Length: 156
Image (cartoon, rainbow, N blue to C red; front, side):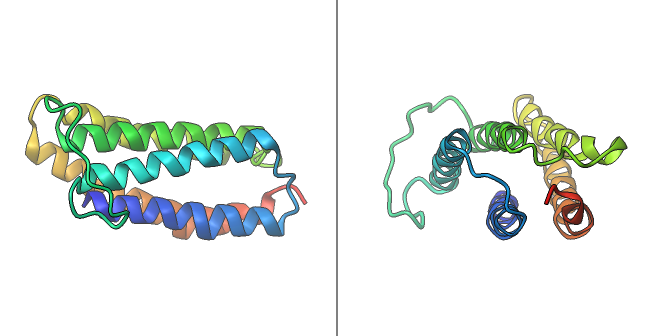
């Protein structure tokens, strides 16, 4: 479930954001590049958190924070990633031509990620599983319904 969420976030970042922004001729500033670098490091760290020994980056890492569960570390990294993505959107004035409630959707998407992070603490395993399923469904809708609808409204 965690790997699927990570895959969808990377898919969103690479296929939609990078490709569509390049086509829209939006200026890619140095601060946006710095945010991209940090987001890459965060996603790479999340990959290592998912599997500290046999990950696709071939990085073997000992647990630095043994008292924090893998799910907690993963969801806090995803929350940080999403906040930085919103900063990136702000730096590029990505949603400047979008009016009304549609503009709030990327900001509201932070809430299910944050709720998954919060659900890792009280050991509510069943609630966390349902939350992760909900996160996947929300991401699928966000990527395959909201993004194709909203991208034509980006500034040209």
